[in-house]
Image (cartoon, rainbow, N blue to C red; front, side):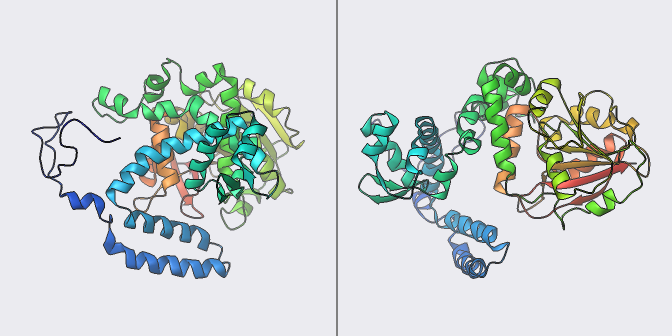
Length: 432
């Protein structure tokens, strides 16, 4: 991959203008690119890793994530700019290609059926694939930490490879290829085309450019049911193992349910609730909560929900949240990861359709979404923000964004409940 034409290793020259015409190329001393990125941070980060490591050993419940954060920051500080550039440009795309291929070949199922090491040739034979090809794929997956190497062309399973034997997890890779990644890759071209304006039209954003379609993301999924199923699996896996607002110590659920409800009154209306995972979780964690639990979504989604053996107390109701809410006076109207799919203008319509149904002093709107902090944002949340920009022309919102949006619909935020960094918050709202 050496550049043959011209001087490939000259470092001190400047160009009379860049290809986009915005600025001249800066003079960069060659040693900068091969020196640690922020070496001055290394000593304090080493101390953080050590402290978090001791806490992890002592079973501190928050120590694992603290240790991960510190370890990542230490890697970023030690890594040279050249190494970071190669990681971003080479490792991420190639790792993804190998993961999706391994999923398609069933390599993780073959490797993870027991804890015994397996030769690449053995796995290739079981998968019905070329031995040399499988060997190359496995070697890269080992190099990036997906599996463990136990000898020449011999590998052992890890927790990650075991998880990828489940379709709930392995569907993430074909899902991203089928309905997400091309939109993300089209972001630079789309932004350039629009003069670098913040996207605000869900039917004219990077998704349409990348997938060469006029369809909105959700309409695209209707035409690609396999991708839709993979998307649903990916979302359920993303949410697994994360603190829930229904857990004791997160949101004040007792205050929500210890209220007088008349016969037939609704306690919780889950708008856009898909197949009912959240209401099922609520009923399981709060079995004695009074009132109706209402699951609302579009007819085609609810057909799948009807096959899910939902608790008999969960009522299924067809409803498009772009129309007026039919359940009047509910204690809470709940939306989980709904509003981040839509532009501010669309979100305002969704919220305004709930307002007429609300009972002042009684009804709440509970919005279960990310709230990006002003500083120290978590990488999962910022990654999701760019995905939403690409595929929906929408956003993961800051606290200021949420206040502005909610107030535009005649509501006010009572409190934003947050358990920990990088976990979806619960935004509790009432009539203004």
